[in-house]
Length: 161
Image 1 (cartoon, rainbow, N blue to C red):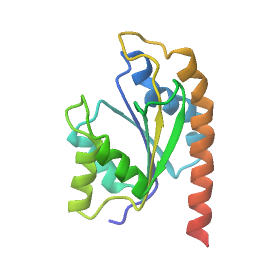
Image 2 (cartoon, rainbow, N blue to C red):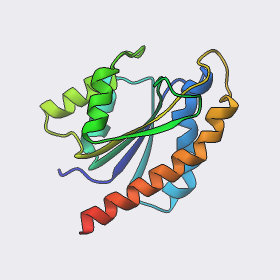
Image 3 (cartoon, helix red, strand yellow):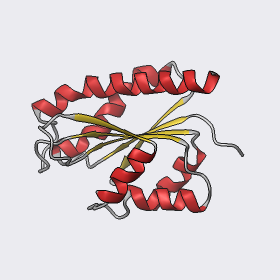
Image 4 (cartoon, one colour):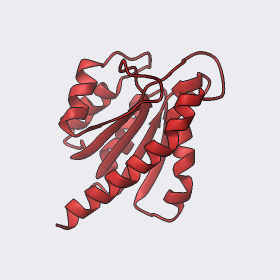
């Protein structure tokens, strides 16, 4: 069965302040996804091998996660295609059961890695027990939503051309 749709995968632990940004972005995208049957929002939590299936089933993939990049808190960076792969391979350390790089290796082995893929990283201010994003990370959520919409529009225009 050919891959279809766009998987937007939010990662992180909702009990650890800014680590929850992936889930918060998914919540912000719910109204958009409700009117766009191409979008599939998926809370990937703290990652597991079970995500290999949804990733392999998607034609396009956008991952949203807190990422320690050495930038000021709340900074949003987009890594697309091979830049995403390089970011994952050079910053592959993960406290999760499995890393996103591991999942991509599975997808490569099964020839199911989406050719259109991107990682949107948000620099955390704090990763500690708590159920609220810090102000700079919370302020970045609308920017992340805008970047996702712009990326989807560009990908869709590229697919038509």
